[in-house]
Every structure is written in structure tokens, then in C-alpha cells.
Image (cartoon, rainbow, N blue to C red; front, top):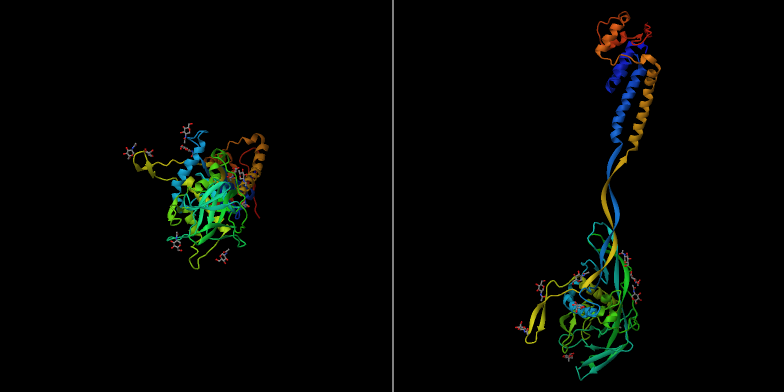
Length: 506
Ligand SMILES: *[C@@H]1O[C@H](CO)[C@@H](O)[C@H](O)[C@H]1NC(C)=O
Ligand SMILES: *[C@@H]1O[C@H](CO)[C@@H](O)[C@H](O)[C@H]1NC(C)=O
Ligand SMILES: *[C@@H]1O[C@H](CO)[C@@H](O)[C@H](O)[C@H]1NC(C)=O
Ligand SMILES: *[C@@H]1O[C@H](CO)[C@@H](O)[C@H](O)[C@H]1NC(C)=O
Ligand SMILES: *[C@@H]1O[C@H](CO)[C@@H](O)[C@H](O)[C@H]1NC(C)=O
Ligand SMILES: *[C@@H]1O[C@H](CO)[C@@H](O)[C@H](O)[C@H]1NC(C)=O
Ligand SMILES: *[C@@H]1O[C@H](CO)[C@@H](O)[C@H](O)[C@H]1NC(C)=O
Ligand SMILES: *[C@@H]1O[C@H](CO)[C@@H](O)[C@H](O)[C@H]1NC(C)=O
Ligand SMILES: *[C@@H]1O[C@H](CO)[C@@H](O)[C@H](O)[C@H]1NC(C)=O
């Protein structure tokens, strides 16, 4: 187009790069030849620079933790393992589990009162999670063993002088032995349990068990009194109800955090026994839901004996469960001065609940690691042999939902980069419009033979425009400043009409 030579020079030089464009913007201060041309070159290249920066900044990869729920298996309550039994001999599992209990429950004292066993929490057994990738807290099912005791209304105790010189009790058609406890050299006060029913436990005591009102249950007279000191005992029967609970446990350690609802009793009052009172055969008892749990009293009476005899006469010893009760309540014989003399009913029920839960925990989780030494009689000589212990107890299975955390990646769109890039692109479009329109409007002239602004092109132009020699003043020192001043002549280098006019600046 027709313009000054300096404008052509400045515009062409500005297109060489952003640095050159900046320099020529500066040069416009001295000789303002083509402010618009240089500025548009500067803006065009500047916007391309902006695009170069914003394009890689459009996306950023971000790592984030995502949590998903996953269903996992749990180990729930212990139950009979019937493998190896057929329907016809299934009830023999009761004898096998009794036998198994008498061996494995030797570890009960180390379980009782310990809170280090995942799955056991006082009187509650909660489901243990299988190995999993979860984190945080998990809700699982739990079962509370709620023991409730009531006095017997039909109990009778008679001294049996003939057969064993002791007292024999009976209730609901079941007989049981009564060994009053405080006596002799070893003076153990008595909370002693006995059974006769698979689903409930008969307990008698020589020390008072009082309820929250401070009252005792009706006493049963011993006639004659035992060693002239114990003339009456409390006899009662305890039954179990299962309480559905939920426990919150740690996904990895299986440690319990919360269990609801609480089964710990804080009050109680004596009433007549109201639990199950129906004598069932073993095959009747094999009914669902969980005969192992229902027949709790059978395993309770299989708890091994300690080496503390009940009294001087009896061959029987206190079981480790009874010893636990004596230790837990700090029981002393009545003859001892200042000894605590009574126990509250709810404390006893809570203690029995812990005993039963610990017992089932042990039956399920602590099989004997080695064979046990057994007394055997093979017909000729009695001998001791090692017997392998088979475990007829397995576990029910449950489910729980755990939360698994995993690290994932995503591309984040940068809204700033996108807006800046979009603005730059629109600016580029607008800046290129004039050039496109000029090219489109110049018709046949648009096919200019000049493809650059190098020195060869310059010489060619000079040779084809001899008038430039007249137009351009000779410059002594070819500094940028001087050349640009000299080039302020209006001309058109390519195309038909060439008008020459010296550009006069004011
Ligand atoms: C029960 O009976 C089956 C066959 O009916 C037999 O294989 C199994 O050994 C028996 N189990 C017991 C404990 O007697
Ligand atoms: C609890 O047990 C019930 C019935 O067995 C089952 O439907 C439920 O999914 C269990 N819940 C958990 C948290 O294990
Ligand atoms: C009865 O009690 C006395 C002391 O109170 C004791 O010396 C004696 O051995 C006891 N007798 C029996 C049979 O337990
Ligand atoms: C406890 O849950 C089991 C199964 O989930 C159900 O059969 C039983 O009735 C529930 N017991 C109580 C007391 O809600
Ligand atoms: C425990 O059992 C008794 C008697 O069946 C019942 O009254 C009581 O509500 C039960 N306790 C819980 C916590 O369910
Ligand atoms: C239980 O013991 C307390 C103190 O140890 C005593 O005050 C209370 O009278 C006793 N109750 C019974 C029924 O013996
Ligand atoms: C009984 O056991 C003893 C000692 O192990 C052995 O010497 C004897 O042969 C056995 N008798 C029978 C009948 O198996
Ligand atoms: C006890 O088990 C061991 C291996 O577990 C076996 O070698 C041994 O024969 C078994 N003993 C009896 C009496 O079954
Ligand atoms: C039941 O016992 C058999 C053999 O005694 C054993 O192979 C099986 O795994 C046990 N089942 C469960 C669920 O523990």
C-alpha cells in the first residue's frame, strides 16, 4: 500500500518477533511512521505469546482420594459345624462339643476380663471383619448375652443321708446337687452354679444376693444346717436372651469403638424365674437359629474345674467360672470379720453375661493348639495318652460395608487460562481482519512477487524503483534514526500507481 518507506520498514521489522516489535514501538517515539502497523504486529505477536503460555496451562493433572463402599464378609457368632454328622447322629454333636468345651475352656481365665480380644467386648460378641482394604469405622452386627435371673417357686432341697450324705435340690423335674461352700480349712463362700437344663443355669449362694431395693430372694432352708453354720441358701435360675446390637469397629484392627444398645444393667429386682421352662430332647434342640448358642448352659457346666475344692468333703472343685465370680465380687466367708457380705443382682447378671460371652468367644476362637493328655482304659491297663482335639465349632458368616480410599487422577480445566486464551484468539482474529480484507480487496495485484524483506528483495525493489534515488536523501551515517528519518517519503513499492510525496512532518 501507499505509505512511507519507514512505515514499510518498521512494520516489516516488527513482524520479525515480539522483541523487535517492542523495539520498533519505541522507535515510533522519535519518528512516528506507522504506529498502527507496528502496534498491530506487536499485539498479534503478543497474543501468540499469550497463547503459547495459556495452551499448556489449560489442563492440570490433579491427584485426589476417592472413597468407595465395598461389601466384605464377617465372622459372626460361633455355631455347630455339622460336617461329619448325618441327620441320624446329629444330636451327638452335643456330647462332642461338651467334650471339646471341657478341653478348650481351660484358657477361659486368660480371656475373662481381658479387652485385647477382637470380637469380644464384655458381654457382647461382635462380628470380626475379614481382611479388607477399608479404612475408618465400620458398622457390624453384634450380639449381647443378656442374662436374667429369677428365683424358683418350686424348689426343694433334701438331705440325702443314704446315697451321698449331701443335699439334693429339685426344680421343674430336674435334680441337682447342692454343695454348700463355706467350710473347713479352705473357707470358700459360695456362688456355685449347677445345671440340669441346657438353656438355663441354676445358681445357689450362701452369701446374700440383693436387688436394687436391697431385698433378697426367698431363702431355701437346709435341714440339717451345713456344719451348723449355713442353714439357708438362695437358689435361683438364670436364662439368656440375645440382644441384637450394632458395633462400630476399626476396619483394620477390629477394635471396638461403640456398641449399641448397651446391655450393662444398672438396676434389677428379684422376681420369679420367667425364662424358658420346657425340657427339650437333644434332637428338639437342634432347631435353628443357633443351637450352640441356645444350649449355653451345657457348655457353661463343661467349664473345667479349678484346683480349689468346694468344701472339705466334696470331691468337686469350683469351676474356673465360679472362681472368677468369687474373685470379681471379693467374696469372703461369713465368719470373716468386716468382709463384704452381699452382692447386687445386676452385678451378678452382668458378670454372668461376661462369662457367657467369653465362653462362646473361647469355643470359637481358641481351640487347643496341641493334643490333650487323656486318661484312657483300653481294657487291660489304664494309661495316659495324647488325644487330638477336633473342633466341632465353626462360625456363621455375615457381611459389612467398608469404605475404601483410593488415589485417582483427573484433568482440571483452568478457567483463567481458557478465558485468557479465548480472548487472545479473538484478538488474533480481529487483528488479522484488516490484512485479510486488504488482500481480498486488492484484486489481481494480490499476487505480489515479493516473498520477503531480505536484502535481495530490497535490492530488487531498489532496481525497479529508480525514482527512489531522487526521493531518498543521502545519509552520511546510516544509523537507525537517520535512515528512518530519510525514509519518510510516501511511495508504493508494489503495484501500478506510484505517487511520490515527501512526507513533511511538523
Ligand atoms: C454320623 O453318621 C455318618 C454316616 O451316617 C458317619 O459317617 C459319621 O462318622 C457319624 N458321625 C459321628 C460323630 O458319629
Ligand atoms: C446384620 O445382620 C442382618 C441379618 O443377619 C443383616 O441383614 C445385616 O446386613 C447385618 N448388618 C451388618 C452391618 O453386618
Ligand atoms: C465346721 O466348721 C468348723 C469351724 O467353723 C471347722 O473347724 C470344721 O472343720 C467344719 N466341719 C466341716 C465338716 O466342714
Ligand atoms: C435379631 O436379629 C435376628 C436376625 O437378624 C432376628 O431374627 C431376631 O428376631 C432379632 N431379635 C430381636 C430381639 O430383635
Ligand atoms: C434382658 O432380658 C430381660 C428379660 O428378658 C429384658 O427385660 C431386658 O429388657 C433385656 N435387656 C436388654 C438390654 O434387652
Ligand atoms: C449389703 O451390704 C451392705 C454393706 O456391705 C449392708 O449395708 C446391707 O445391709 C447389706 N444388705 C443385705 C441384704 O445384707
Ligand atoms: C492297652 O495299653 C497298654 C499301654 O499302652 C498296652 O501295653 C496294651 O497292649 C493295651 N491293651 C490293649 C488290649 O490294647
Ligand atoms: C493327631 O494329629 C497328628 C497330626 O495332626 C497325627 O499325626 C496323629 O496321628 C494324630 N493322632 C491321633 C491319635 O489321631
Ligand atoms: C467344619 O469342619 C470340617 C472338618 O472338621 C472343616 O473342614 C470345615 O472347614 C469346617 N467348616 C467350617 C465352616 O469351619
